[in-house]
Image (tube, rainbow over all chains, first blue to last red):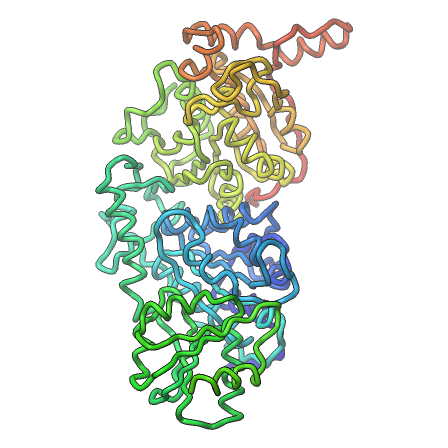
Length: 366
Length: 262
């Protein structure tokens, strides 16, 4: 059974988190993400969870990580400037392999920029924003339904890979209202428990260690310092650092095919739109308006780790067109994986590309 | 009174300098924990970054060594998600009062049920002796080569003003009193803040005419005045001796607290 409702994207995100079993939310109000916190403040206590409005974003993600180490599914939601403030502890979560979910309802930047306008300007920040080398997972919903579905999925991926996982949405999807189908229950995948006799940071075959949350009697020492498999600091041995950081990156990058989630339309096409998030809605409109097999569409629901193999689904592609609500961020990632020309169609200012704008570019390159 | 069961023996020896007071404060804390009868599996130690913050790594419980200044925010998440766990935070003056100042006052305001022990050595010890918000005016450090020119924070008074339910201050000289204060804090629902002033012979004492460890400890002893004595001096209209600081229990109250197990 399920129920169908007409709701806002941010509300659907909160509903997805609740359905996934999120029981801790620490946050700080920021437009345009605030409705997620407001919904959680109303709903979490009744679901037996904890909502806490922290003093800032640094504290929000810190509290989320602390809660996650007790075994709770935990998340925070923010927008660009708050996301920047979280970066230090996002690196900590990556280093300590803490499963948690961070929702970024992107707005126009840099700085306080355009609080009530949409953008996709944090796509590289969510991959490279913290210091050092690491890898993360980022999902990009394009509808209110996907705000629900991908939030649930973000928790599963965070737990499975023990990594901070991002829902990289934006003001358009966060604030739009659409019909959503909400199942009565969703299946969830929790972290693999730490096996008896295993060390707390000893990875299994998939590169992911078992998880022993606080209070389970395993006396786990968690540190952001370079550490060995016992979790003990080992900060001056080049090999220890190399081994740890390579594993943290490899556990995500080697699972790219597993994590990938994308949609393909017209794989035989010669001109292919590559999108993520709401620009895909404009491309869908263009393709509805002009049924034409020579136009293809690759829509990414997971952008990090980047699924470069998805580009090979279009063997006849002569040109890739990439509309983004930034000055060209993910287009760089596409360019480095294909030989064909990749045309960036950037748009900033807070509004979606119109179908006519995309058609004009299409006319030039097909 | 040392609690050997609580030490991660495979992590010893520790990294603290000879003569450092942090070991004393860890011992006092573990003695208080034993007095409380807490179980290792139900106790979590949390810290930020700095000399003091390495302490949880030597204790055989679940422990979270976090980012600089953020320990109280992490600890809030732990305690709010699992109120049945006992949460103890070790922090230092730089960690707590400078980068962590905002988290400090808000944790006190929320009165989250945990015990916070600040090893205040008046200096950034781990990075090599730079001036901190508690470096006394006039003191020499690597970033105050002409003497610290800023007023120092009184961390205990700050915790009282911000709303913590239990606040006390002692020093590494007062081991019995400190142990009792930590235990009293652990018994008090809400946030307990215990400031433990301690010696840093390596990076503070040798630049400030306190070259030996005994000299530093004697300085702590001789400059500490009991709260009761201070109050008497104030009542009598007499001046409080310059350079002294109060020790003792500054507040024990029962304001509404968060994360208290029901």
